[in-house]
Image (cartoon, rainbow, N blue to C red):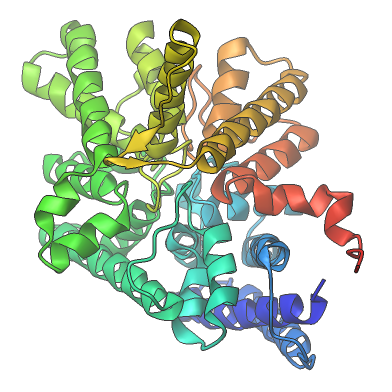
Length: 480
């Protein structure tokens, strides 16, 4: 195990976090809020830890998959522990655990909250909450890889461990250039959305924070009623468009930029994603048509919620607990589907759903025709059995974690719908829940710890967190 390179890289991450904390500090200074001290202390602590980690001399720079997974796991955990300090020191938070929950929810782009009234929070804290979505959306390690130079194979181990999706396709040969392209697309889309929201009459602060939350498909907002507080069709339409855009594989945008639009549109994952959105829209609109005076209003609410849930953004407008059970259960199913691989969305990812469905079809065909030789194909290309096995293993572990989390959380005494949707919301990084639960503040400390782990496991796609608890991770390999 190359511990030195692990801690050195974590130190680089902490350097970036200390710089990013200057933005909410600036807002606290301008607004003359009492959070200035909290941000200053946090920045000093972060910078000190970063210096301590990066001063360690690195003799061997080569890393393998194990180091890549540990770098990602440690970075996200330490970032969250430090990122919770401004809220804990600068507000009247009930406990540090609540602040950690809120910060993990931010970085993992979940959007679940333990704050019953976000409108009383200082502007700087609300900015930091939404900014954590933007930082965690594309991944802070991807950002660091875009800036620093290093071994390309080492960087690829980190990129694979952090970027969501079962297949990490490189846009170009160099991982550093690849990371820069990803972040360039991410930044440009965020700026466009912020500009459109500002042109729609929203304040600069609200335009930027909404854009941060949408880009990271997070869901934090400065108002208790979320996007519903704006009562603006224009704002909702902009959010719908960008929630769906940020749910797509960023390779699609790159292909469009380099004028390979036909190749982009042939993506099976892209077509499946929009087919699910369209079919869900038809069923829900028909199901809720009697709840609203016009078809237009039914369509508006249905499309907003479908876009919010399948993108795992978690913005809200109307109360879906008043909708028929069929519509609620469709939204619950969309939590598991999530967006496309290589996007900022959570969930299982559409590509995994496609692979699982095709593998099931292949298995059934094998039962009927035992001598037949078939393969699972995506976009016309045959997938290796190793890839299919990897997806099947991922889903199996995912379900085991889900069931264990559900059973632990059920001890709090909530009904089936609340407990099930709460776990589904956290492990899929969605945010909203069903059953009338608005925040997670009423859950026990043990349940909050489970939710924190679920959010991290969901965002980092299980393995980086799991390896922390494996004995083989820390065991010295036997040399022959």
